[in-house]
Amino acid sequence: MAVVDLLSGACAVRPAEDADAVDGVPAQAVARPADAQETSALLRACHDAGLAVVVRGHGSKITWGRAPERVDVVLETGGMAGLVEHSRGDLVATAGAGMPLDRLGELLAEARHQLVVDDLAAGRGADGAGSTLGGAVATGMCGPRRLWAGPVRDLVIGVRLVLADGTVARSGGKVVKNVAGYDLAKLLTGSYGTLAVITEVTVRLHPEPQEEVSVRARVSPDRLEATLALLVRSQLAPHTLEVSAAPGSDPLVTVGLGGSPGGTRQRADAVATSLASPDLAGGSVAVVDPGTPEDELPSGLADVDQQDSPAGTSTTRPVLVRTTGRLSGIPELVRVATDQGFGVTGSAGVGVLHARLPEETPPEQAHHALEQLRATSLRLGGSTVVLDAPPAVKSGLDAEATWGPVPGLDLMRRVKAEFDPGRLLAPGRFVGGL
Image (cartoon, rainbow, N blue to C red; front, top):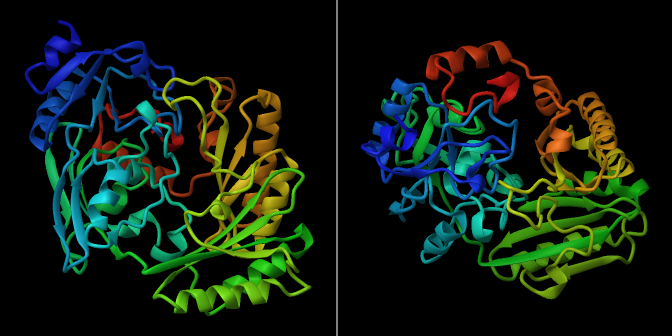
């Protein structure tokens, strides 16, 4: 029996097309459940038939991680894209896993609330779409404002999920103070869809700042360490502290501040005065308002993960890496990355950088650059993970070369065996071939 016929009683399903392949691995069917109950019926049928399932929102990060060993069914979360509840007094919202982040932002903005998760894959999905809420949680995606609000795993306070055998479960609650039970929400965050299918997410919100201002400064590489140290130690509570650099150019430091009118501008002026010291950036300091032309990153320092082709089908996508290190080591990490040809942008305030190699980089050169960057990050107490790469580069990377050394891998294997003993959820996509 064809896979489509086998699953037709569970939810809407269609034959897969070439564009539905996951990182070059063809699928047989695409299913679109409308809720947790249909997801349960679908996964139960797949479990009984031994069919491998990969979850997809808009496909903006579908090629992140390793290519799966096999894909029988692509499970689209677009049928679960509604806002379930917005508890304004508690600053909590619940939405379906397929809710687009930009649409969620529009709905929350009506109450001047926001989910502080930056979309690192904006525009990379089907038809130029960005990340969904479920995709952001599944990949543990974090951006500049992590310094202010914490990583996405700290913002998720509850999930509704379906296990590989169709069992429906819920973890967490709808209020921030609910801490009863084992925190499956944090366990699923960053698991790349290998443990369960998330159908609904409850998140902690923040009020929108009444005013936002950024301070930008060009800093010579030999002054970057002193500049970042000054900003990290400051009492001005920045929302973001970013450093961006391209090969052959001085790093650009951006400090984002938000808060009440007047006070935010005063803090920005204080940051600008400090950075204008001759020992730091000197005269190359500017205070800019968001949304203005001056707020755009200069040529060569645009978001490192942007590309012209959708993530799911492009064979010329760039090498995208997340690299980390202790805060004092960020200047060295930036230097090594740019020396190896990477463009870099990331949070110097939390020690997380994203680096991008141009898509035309030869595979051998890319592999060497990755080795040098990983060696540096490990020496600085961090790690380097290859989020995405073109097939010619990715095919030369095994699981360890993709993810790097993984502490606790044996425990992670036991967790995978407990949640998905048949290895039916995105098999081989995660660390250690999980």
